Length: 258
Ligand SMILES: NC(=O)c1ccc[n+]([C@@H]2O[C@H](COP(=O)([O-])OP(=O)(O)OC[C@H]3O[C@@H](n4cnc5c(N)ncnc54)[C@H](OP(=O)(O)O)[C@@H]3O)[C@@H](O)[C@H]2O)c1
Image (cartoon, rainbow, N blue to C red):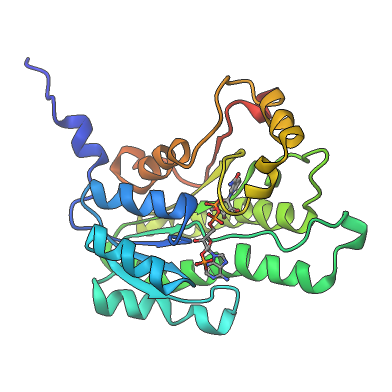
């Protein structure tokens, strides 16, 4: 029998599927939005910076939806705007996230703890709730949350207690939603990146000492990039991962394997 040379490409194709990518004005979210569009998805890009979103939306023939996701009262505006502009969403990638304090745990201000939770954990949960009825009606859906290895292990020398708690919360949310929504063929997974250069981690890489610390603790001999994480997100978004749900996939160059 002749090999079906297009079979793998079909498994990773997302022709015509509507996707929402948060945090798409820079870094990982922007790379994911571009990659999903390149395999056929119609992508709504969400973040605060309207100018960057408009530029990316034009490039990928998508839709820009500006929203401050750290305000739970505003998160509800995102999905209706996507439904009106592109149609019902079948893919949601929660990549927006930030760190609001680098104080040691015992000194983290309550306000920073709350802001971290609102953006990194509450917003992905609210967005998942908002896409749920559309995915249920379609009979399928894929939600991919972006957490961090700091949701799994402590990182010596880089204090981030509330950030770690918010990211670990995403893995718990992922497993629970996966089980509750499996009957509707809605899959929910998390990708946990190690370190890569972006706006958030920029200051870390500016210090040669910190950059050397990251190199020393990463078994693979090269620096991670947003593109290294994109593959896992695209895989989880589509049919290639059709039997994968409730999982946290770590993409960290081996950091947590030591
Ligand atoms: N870089 C790393 O080493 C690393 C490691 C582990 C996990 N991560 C996670 O990966 C994800 C992407 O981060 P990145 O490294 O690509 O950083 P990034 O370039 O700083 O991207 C963060 C994105 O989140 C958006 N965002 C921040 N606050 C927002 C708000 N209040 N409302 C809406 N959007 C908001 C930003 O857009 P606006 O500023 O335009 O709103 C931006 O698009 C994050 O969840 C991060 O925690 C990163």
